[in-house]
Length: 118
Image 1 (cartoon, rainbow, N blue to C red):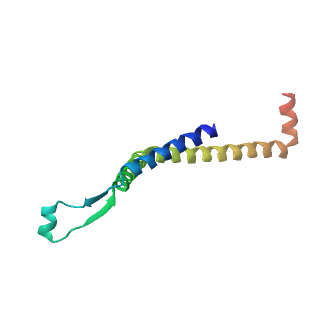
Image 2: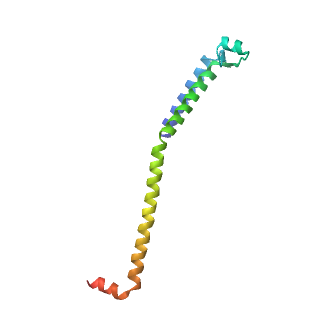
């Protein structure tokens, strides 16, 4: 199974290297349209290789998706946390009741004998 996993990640790495080599031309990434940048006299432009822009876009999309899913599952995690607390409280209560029942049987020998014969 590890061999398949390593082969898969090697194939993914090879694909990423090929994408990087095929898209290594420099592109200008602008934060706002040219007309608005000239109007405000702000020009937040960055020149990067195209593969960096592609990888950053994919990474940003993944992070937004993970965050979206984490927020969506908040209610399910809260319900599971509440159920876990309830189970722990019930286990603790059962242990206390078992301890009380065992203590009652060992304290009164006459009752213990009557329960065995009855």
